[in-house]
Length: 228
Image (tube, rainbow, N blue to C red; front, side, top):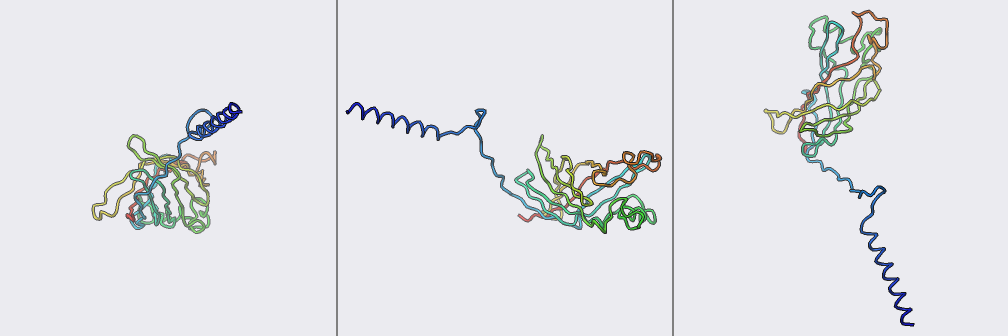
């Protein structure tokens, strides 16, 4: 009887040890131990200083180009030390401004881009129907000491992803609570947002002097005010 009781006790003890051992480490299929994702703490927060912030653009034809800017009138940015965590920026499309022309030529091109004339309303941006554009950061990483971001650009009611481009900070000497947030030049294909006017890929029979290249060259110069 004692031997039988001892055997049952040993079996129960081994069973308990097995359960406890299994609880120590749970491995997913494939043998790798799953490491919980670390939540990044926001260490800096910023708001956009609208009157000093711009999205700079350049559009090209076959033999000429034009450049200008659009006001980034509000937005915010958060980071964890050097890494960008989130950001959201809104552009006022009614502030489209041409920088390489003067007088009548400048005004005429701005009117065409804004869609002020009935015949040009949908050729480019139609700012009465779509008064704002928005860029929201969806990913960021640091590579060889350089910050890269990518994001969703909503333009004319259409949202597409902008591929990663390099950004950097510059000091703002007049105020230590402010900092410049700038980018290297990057490109988007305007036809992805329904801006087809003058595109050889859309209108294949266009004469060379009417062709406008699909790629728009962009870079940002945004002044940020520290809020944290």
